Image (cartoon, rainbow, N blue to C red; front, side, top):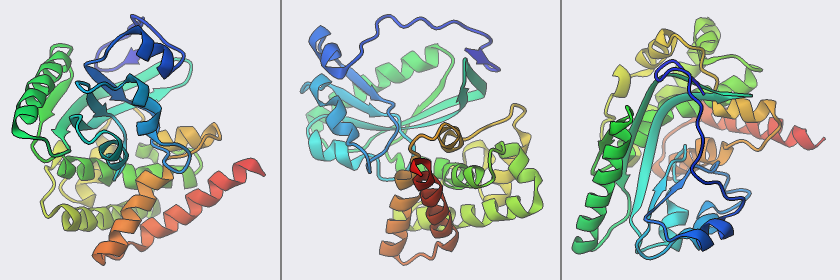
Length: 278
């Protein structure tokens, strides 16, 4: 791993399993961290981890996008479900390349009885401290959704636009006047929609309080940032188009918010993905 924050490292996992079934036979887990691509049009992430979940397991969902929690709430209504928002710049080729920042925001998403909630809070505080001890900023919030929408300002704009731009880094996109305008107009739709859905202001992480401050922030990052959707597109893999674009568009229709840029981006990204099989 090459990291601007942590330096060059070699990571050796303690143990690796080929399947969930193998992992479930090996131990009973206090935590299951879900870092699968969120592709609800192809598979159910909650179903995929089900064999590793016991009644005491805390499920921590490290996935991008909007509406990613619902499959887990449906399948595991009594397990504490932690919606996790990760702010990190990573690209994997032959090596994992990590930028200069990493931050995690945690929040218990589902409603639990008081005794279960107290136990879940203790469990969450413990693992949050584990990350802090390793140099990763970590916070716990009662309502995590404003943080999820905060991240989506960048995710919901730079991801699809980078695919359509044919491989540009985030910094290259904001240097182009026309592309920057497209990003900022898409970001404005996300700001309006997120505030309508949550009923709250965003936390302003990294000083991002409006579209211009978001693109200024991108420009200030010293290491080139390539979106995960772009990397998937370049490798002709399925893209997280549903949780990045389709789910927010459905919410926009529900709440009466106009999102023409997001709808156009969804149409184009969908066509690009469908072209893989031709």
